[in-house]
Picture (cartoon, rainbow, N blue to C red):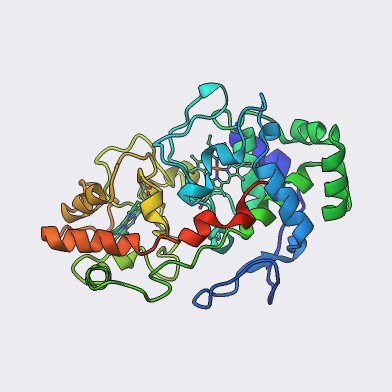
Length: 327
Ligand code: HEC
Ligand code: HEC
């Protein structure tokens, strides 16, 4: 049902061709980050970002006006939350842990199976998803039409009245500003323990950086990290129907990982310590488990240092930045 809606509604939203946008004044790009790609059909400007921010915080997009994007994606938790599964409208629960929205401008594919190819398209998912906002984007834009402020802001931002085009593009614009690259790690401000943890992280013994690599600490691939012998949620298989994809999920970024517990697609691992224990034991047997998940010996002190290194990826300026708040 969700996918049928997606296909139908995609007809309402013009396709987004991606082109490199050289530079813009609306987002701060850290020196150690590449310039992001912004679709030419939805270039950033302040009125688009502001409208997207208003909508992100407005429960008007949910069927009973009770839930906004922010109900699950909270700034203090790097735009995820601290629950295994977050309730949607009418206290309905899905089966997945909320993902952080930090640095989403850099991703090629969204959701844990990677089936959604642009941020604009992704906006449809939570609005239409029964367990999230349980609504309909056309009805949501009709609600917006009843508010003069939204009509005015839509006209300024996109030169048209509120409609699915405006909702999806403005929210995507706001999300593209959520860049996080100001942690102690970025500032090269690591303690000795953290440096030790960093060496372990990138070591051949632990192999974390085989998957959690690059400036976002994700290679953006889909991997089976041995979480289960039998998966309830088949992950990327849901998209491809290929047996080799059972139990494969998008490799998550580890930026702000200290703030986004609990962990994994279902929020089943509660602490970073338990995550490391999972990897040190080599995970559970699964035919699709990555060859890089083999297990390793790690001392108590090494484990502590690795956790301290992961904590150096927390960007406190990001989680307190007033630009992202709803005033
Ligand atoms: C009820 C909680 C809830 C609400 C409300 C919600 N989300 Fe999410 N969001 C999630 C969950 C859970 C996931 C992970 C889905 C998955 O695992 O595939 C997610 C994933 C995402 C992603 C994908 C991130 C990535 O790296 O692939 C984006 C983007 C996103 N949400 C944006 C939004 C926007 C925009 C809104 C409001 C229109 C919103 N969400 C409303 C829970 C929620
Ligand atoms: C084969 C690729 C791979 C390797 C190697 C790997 N990971 Fe992961 N990691 C993943 C995948 C895939 C997930 C998400 C699984 C899921 O959603 O169920 C994940 C999840 C995590 C999470 C939870 C993230 C979140 O937001 O829920 C942490 C923390 C983590 N890994 C740390 C590490 C550390 C530390 C190492 C090295 C000891 C490591 N990983 C090695 C692929 C890998």
